[in-house]
Each structure stands twice: as structure tokens, then as C-alpha cells.
Image (tube, rainbow over the protein chains, first blue to last red):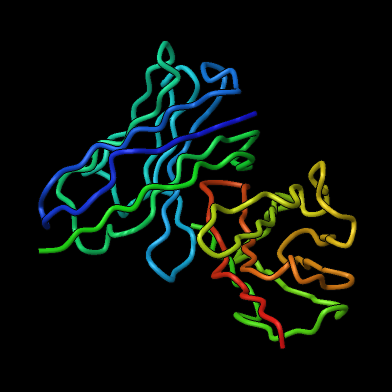
Length: 118
Length: 106
């Protein structure tokens, strides 16, 4: 069974930092391109960032470029998102998502809530 | 960025109804269109990729069609467990999602 389990969410003040983690099991993590997708409360889905299987290719949405950093540790089957300079508009549930093929998202974690508020 | 326009934004439906949702891309995306179902408080679930390819285990009452810029998602006979929000997503380039269509029971 595939499991993607996010952690690290919480309440943080504007301008603060947070590091999200995603532990993967049931997949050959080192062969998978991985993504973060977020969903603001009551809103739709927004792609945040993508990292290829060997970290060669990394992409960010314009809304987070320069503030967020995606990374992975294939030895630990883990994906990370370092979020700096957080803003109120970054408040969302952040999902760890596997890219099954060409940006098709076949496995999702349960999500972790990030709240940016003073 | 490729913009995805999904309609309607909400639908009030009865069990057994046929449901149709449309999704339009701001430029041609060939068949790079996927559909997801999200139930309240849960993560999205992939139902259809490549505009019309049903994922394993997904009931056959769900279907998708279209290519280029115009796409359709259909539930042939709505069941109570189909209530939730449905999203289209283009995978031709950096992914973007439609605004979602919320289905609830009339």
C-alpha cells in the first residue's frame, strides 16, 4: 500500500519559517518525481513545487519562487519543503504528491495544515 | 501559464441524475487533461487521466472526453458516494487546476 505522510505544519507568524516533511512508503521513492500541491481553506488546488527523482530538475510556482525550497533524501524516502518568508496567503493544506507520469498525480498524502497569522 | 476554466462551480443533483462538467483550457493541451475527485476533508483522488483513461478501480459510471481546449467529465448515474468536489487539471506544462465543481444532493 502506498503511503505518503506529511508532517511539520502548524501556526507561524508572517515572515517566519517552517519545514514540511513527507515520508513515503510502498513506492520506489528514488524513481519517483515528487511534488507539493497546496489548497487554501475553502479554495482550489495550486501546484507549488516539483523535484525530479535524482533532484536534477526542480521547479517552483511563481508565487513561492525565492522563498520555498524543495529537496529530497532518497535514502530516507523523504521529501521536504523549506518555507521561508511566509505570508498570510501561504495559509493552506500542503499535500505531498507523487507524479505518476508527466504531471499526473496518482498518489496524495493526507495533507498538513500551515497557518500564517500574527 | 495555461488557465483552466471549469463550469459550473456548483451543482445540486439527485441520485440517479446524469452529471456533466466542462473544462476549457486557455490554449491547446492535446489530451493532457486529468480529473480528480475530492471528498470533504480528504485528499484529491485521480479518476481519469489523458482526458478519457479511467483509473483502475474507478467505477465505469465516470467518463471523460475531449481534446485540444474543450473537455467534458460525466457521471452517468449519480450515486450518493459521488458527492464532493471535482477538479480538472492540465498536465501539458506546469500543472494548473480548474476552480472545481462542487456536487451536492438536491
